[in-house]
Length: 254
Image (cartoon, rainbow, N blue to C red; front, side, top):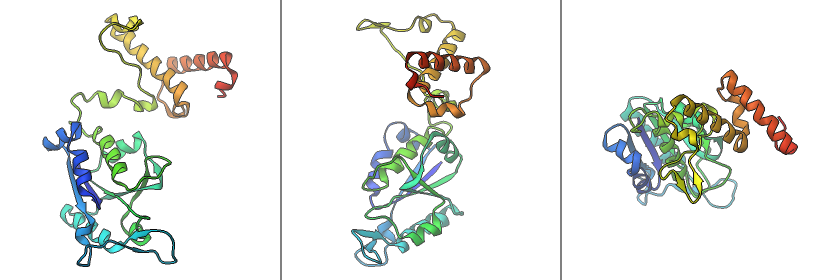
């Protein structure tokens, strides 16, 4: 997987991605992260990439030409026109399924805006995906790009030491992850559930699935609409809903 980040702050990307799991994968040659300074493609001696907006308004706008030339340089080197993700609050909210989908790409470009954004014409020319990481505003697209690259990287074979961990954590199968425990078996009066100490793998797996369903119902019930459940798990879910409705009728309106 080759990530290409179009940015005004390449060091921010390099410093953020060359650590921890992604840094290890980069060193192993599983991932590559190229941070391209858009200023290097400015057509003036001061490497100025922004200007006033037509029609007036507050702030400056990133110009089309430097962004376009920077992307064209990536396309020429890759021998194709890679998918381009523009980080914007106006985009579709990023989720785990999008991470899985994007992890299938060989090359993926992230376009990081600043100031009041980027000239609409170059967005129309090169952007394939408009993506947000939430309903709030940041100073630039670098942090969202790193969030997405971290999430996508986990879906790339070989990045995680334990491949299973990428398949069993939160949002796998549209369920949140079950609670987990480590030593000691008792801490501050709180004990590890007996089933986890039993060594009975089938019972442990059943408990974990049920806990994932319960936690999803309590915290993110909308995810259950597309959750992959067995017949028995669906029955368990319905029982949970009935129990919740009896305890607090307003808590479960399914």
